[in-house]
Length: 167
Image (cartoon, rainbow, N blue to C red):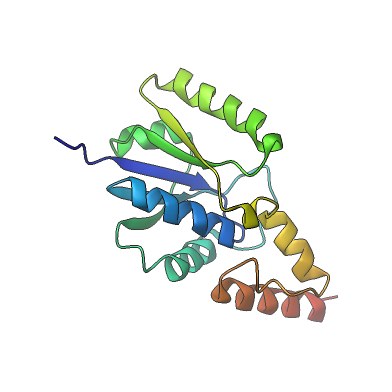
């Protein structure tokens, strides 16, 4: 008998990148259902609102039939318990990500001993890619077309146009 496992891919996704979509694609091939859980990290300055990030992810990932975009707040361990899931998906781009992700995985397991974290590596063409880097490229007038879905690229351009009018 095969278990139908619900996996959760949590993140800030500000903005969603092709690297995020690569992880979503890989996870959707491994699990019966994948919930991409968007949160607003209170320790970060956000470019897009929670709803904008959800909308961008829904548009970018709408071709994955077993992927649902949701939002949550609070502790991930508590959220997982409320939706009856125990699998967390995290992307690892480089060794530099590992220490932080390892600590988070152990903390989640300490909060709920049933939580398992699955680390997925993106395609090597995305190992250097981060949302922060994409925003910086966009702010400095560079093209983000190779790094983000078309809808995200357009939203970044609108955001920068508004910023430049306010300067």
